Amino acid sequence: MQSLVHYGCHFLIPLVVALIFYRENWKIAFITMLAAFVIDLDHLLATTFFDSNRCSINFHPLHSYFAITFYLFLLIPKKSRLVALGLVIHIISDVVDCTLM
Image 1 (cartoon, one colour):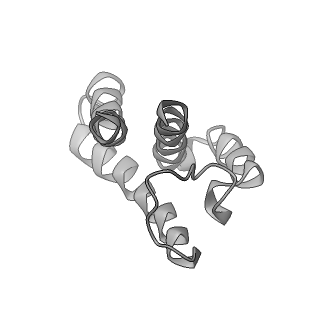
Image 2: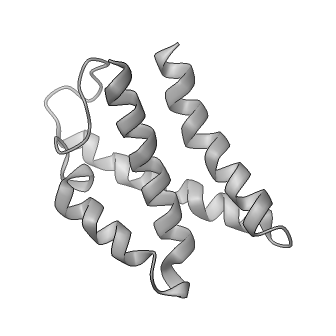
């Protein structure tokens, strides 16, 4: 159940946001937001790549509170907004995952 909610949030929320706010270019918006998955590369720095009992928030460098603050500021300029939305949605999905543990 936890994995279903976690990955559902990772894919469904960006899709819904793209369809509602970027109707004309929803495919590009969706793919751009999914590109935020690149922040999961910091999992490669962990001793165990995947641990279902570990909360990513403030454990991995790109999931740190400092990085999250930076992602929130990226929402302000229009040019970085789609990527920032993907990053923030990704972090929210990880927070939901942490609360379900």
